[in-house]
Amino acid sequence: MTTALGIAPDSAGKGVDPLTHRKVLQSHWASVGIVTGLGVSGRSDLKYNVAAGVAVCSRGSADGYTEAYFGGGATAAVSAGDPSNPRVDRIWIKARDLTQGDADNQVVIGVTQGTPSASPVAPSTPAGCVRLLDMTLPAGATSTQKATPPHSADYAIPYGVSVGVLATANVNQQYEIPEDKQWKKRVSVRFTVQTDRTVNIKWKARASCGSDNSNMASYFVQLRVDGSVINSGVNLASSWIQGAFDEIGVLRFAETKGIDYDVIANRGTHTAEVYVLGNPAANTAPVTLYGIQNLTVTDRGVFR
Image 1 (cartoon, rainbow, N blue to C red):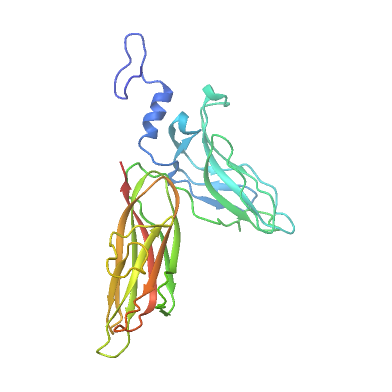
Image 2: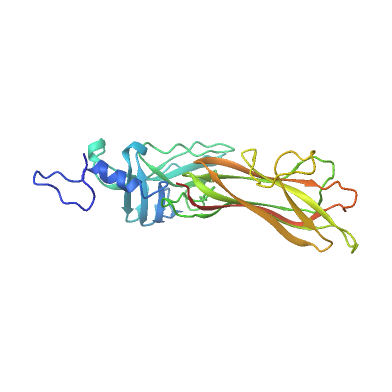
């Protein structure tokens, strides 16, 4: 049995043990990472500087999470850059724990040096540590001053919160939609969620069917996630259209229109795609997409 946070220890001194505390903290966060601060920068020597800040740390899901404050400081020194190739160094933070074999109970930062290569990759994060940022050290570097991050930092996400736009992709190209009764992939994007989430998949594009006032037209759209069509519309008239779809009406004016659907995305990485198909009916004009055609995936919050 366990004692709840906020309840005093009993007469025998039994209260909240550290693992229970860590498991309660874990329930508040969907992922580990930076909460605030902890920016990484180069220096005039071979160390990296880490600003003060707070991170959510973990030794693994079974061990729960800790919330760790670091007051700012420098990592240990790394080696100078390889004469010929760059490398990627990984800067990390760790909440040490005496009961799990560490030297003390302090919050520390460190760096793991990567291997020089024409196409360098980051080294693995040491066990029990959480990555703050990777830094690419140029070939021949004698300091970390010109090191640059190959990507953004990882931030801790509070459980249940909506994190906004997860991914977006644009095509900026005039495109006449073929009327060959075949679905054509127009744009795709990959996105990752840390827990089961409700996400919104949205397509928006500007389309026209020419300058003749008598012209009328439409095109069909399918939104797919991991290869499965998520549209709720069902084709009842044209047996050559495979699967559900939405039809978007088009006039001679280059109007911007779109569709969007909410879906449940399980924890992990997914692919969202937009497929379009021209309307081959004899009394409709060809449809041309103009300017930016956009696919956006937006997080709406945790799915319970």
